[in-house]
Length: 352
Image (cartoon, rainbow, N blue to C red):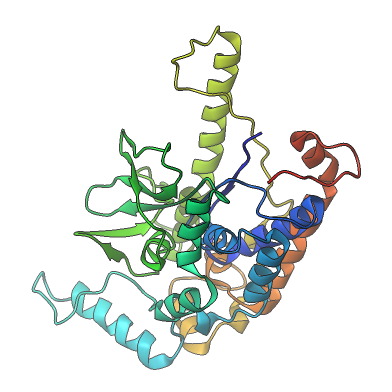
């Protein structure tokens, strides 16, 4: 059986994945990464790359990932000092009030994520991913980003030689080693995090879609942005799963020719049992003062804009809640997971 792990985005919300992975590591037991294929987008690209880099030992990789998340603070993800935030804010103001004249520096983001790049360089051994693919320990690793010039979704992948690059409607597969630049591009949350230049184009969060939410004039910007983030990270997943299940059902009803490239895919979706936005509502008081001031200007507070806060709340208490919830939710569905993997009750997997 070929197993693939698909990790979605969500900024700080991706801590939930770490809890789910912790429960899966308990289920699989000692051994290498049990998922030959790992795909990630946005913060899921970070988690997926970390797992692939330590593919020789799945429980150790998950433990390292959990330790990193649980020790995370906002200043390890983006600059939180007043000077940086004021500098970027004034840059936006100059750009919006320049009447079209080119300002000294044009800003397209609100937060400086150089600390995140340093963290990824320190915690993820990116060359090891290429080594594990070359040795066959991992069949393929992919991270997706959006080309802001063409609007195309690009999956950067490193995989076995039998996996070929692809070009479909607004979707490309580009072969090459997985690097920190590609992961940073995949994790570049629109508006908040800066785009990353790869080749001759700028790339941003891989979850970005063309359809954007409608809004009313009386909604604060924070709520509009929260809805946008949900559309980027969550709505597309549900549509993709529905499409895969329909195609699989159709294939199973037909006599499939040998040369047909479509294959049936079985999906097990692990998702939160609680609203992660509501769980973040009390976190605004823990944000750095300058960032808290900025977010309040967008309308984000304990009484509103919780969805937006949940993507930026890289605070220990919130992350700890998500890791715990992810583990509890997955353990509660352990029998369902075993059935999906074809395991008897109480049996650990030997899949490698």
